[in-house]
Amino acid sequence: MLSDSSVTTMLPVMDMDRARAFYEGCLGLRPGGFRPDGKFVYAVGGSTLALFPKPEGTKADHTAISFQVADIAATIEALKRAQVVFEDYDFPGLKTVNHVCVLGAEKAAWFKDTEGNYLCLHEDIAT
Image (cartoon, rainbow, N blue to C red; front, side):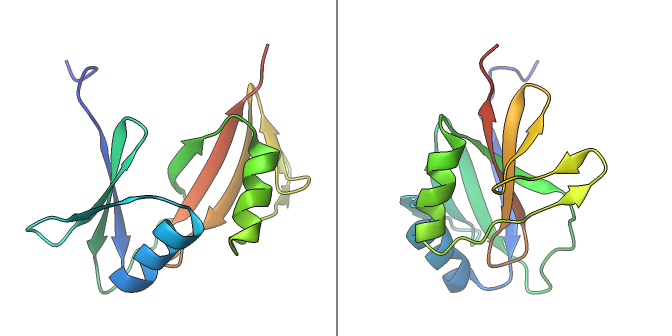
């Protein structure tokens, strides 16, 4: 029923200016502009990312959005040059090496935005 619908990912932000500086300056997203309801949107691939003001922030401890990339190592290096800080993990079943964890048929790496939202890069592993 919804398989042909476009998708908008909604991310709460406490400080819109700070969040926009991160998404535009560090991640390189091109601004789409404010909507009448206060959301700020970006076109990302074939979908939409919307930042919405939420003064109390969010407490999510899961990945809010994952960006599929062709070369995760090169993307990590480029984002590190833009001051993005990656998470490292060493848990049973989840260990990162050079910020990357292999999960089945993909590689993944995580970082947080300025508002505490967990973001991910993932690269499919050729089989």
